[in-house]
Image (cartoon, rainbow, N blue to C red; front, side, top):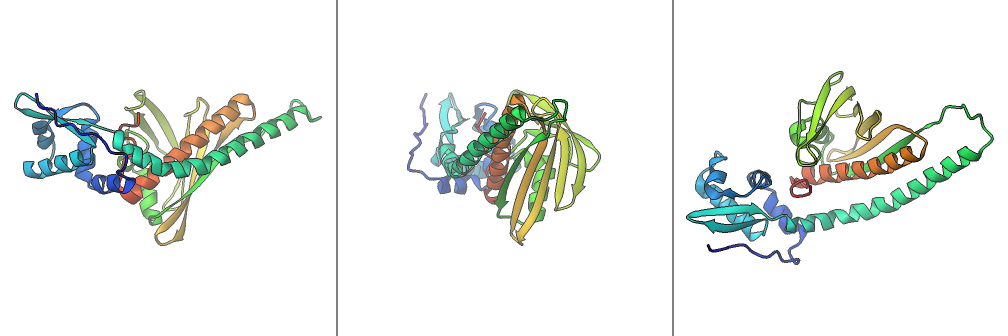
Length: 272
């Protein structure tokens, strides 16, 4: 059996990965290979384009080291190689470092506030204020494209969920699934939708019901500022831990959305 696998070179930067993955057919091929190795014939049969076109796509993916090829008898078999996506991950590292300091400061502030209020001479029966997570990021796309990228489950499956039961519409309940991350599902109750402006919903992602509010603001015709606020955790140790966990999660959500909308890249491929 002749093995035609290749070795990924660290010198290949994120721009090379973006160029190869910019084509939706090649991204669909990688999604298919995420479920396991496939003969070339099976891959070609899954698409409406011609076999020579699929062969060209596979050749480009192989040159970018995103797939490996080997022979089994007379068949050419392809398998996913997620290693080159480290270049994309390195690109995102700039955002992670930006948020890391903010998260450390946030945790220190919340813990200091909690200690101060615990020892203050206040009524022990007074109702505790709820904790709130808040993140922001600009996306280089018009506000309507960002709005659709969030409420449409088909688009969300390229950066956040693996599938969704329906579009987000005010008053309905949708189900989101994460087939590549423990096969979990969650029911999400949509509270309010303002086209191209605002989205809010209730869910239990951290074990307690919290309210998520997403605000969209056009900075200019091709730049949108996204602000996400989630609140509903009690001001106790577990609430602080959930706050930090969800702040990390929303940072990944925004970075994944930004890369998908601006470059057409699905960062979930090979991530879990």
